[in-house]
Figure (cartoon, helix red, strand yellow):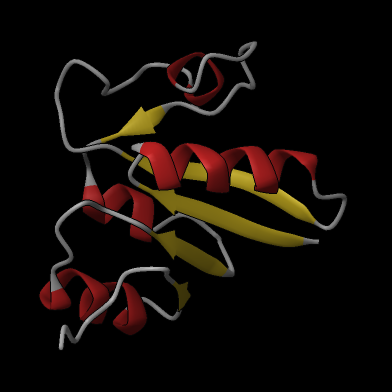
Length: 102
């Protein structure tokens, strides 16, 4: 079982969360959100599904202290400093975010 933190809940983030929830070898253990109005809300409810018992958080340090194998990083605006902080916490990063544009 791989423990996953989702980073952002936009269109791509929502699809990633749904994929994690449906995969038998993945467990969602955290979710970063950028807005205070989403902080503390159940991630399932944020994506239009039933509650799953995982609260979204704006607290980067608390999320990085969570026991997880990887972070699915899919914010609208990527931040290489955040990605480096995630990597320094010992977690792998999986992302659909393009870092170089032609």
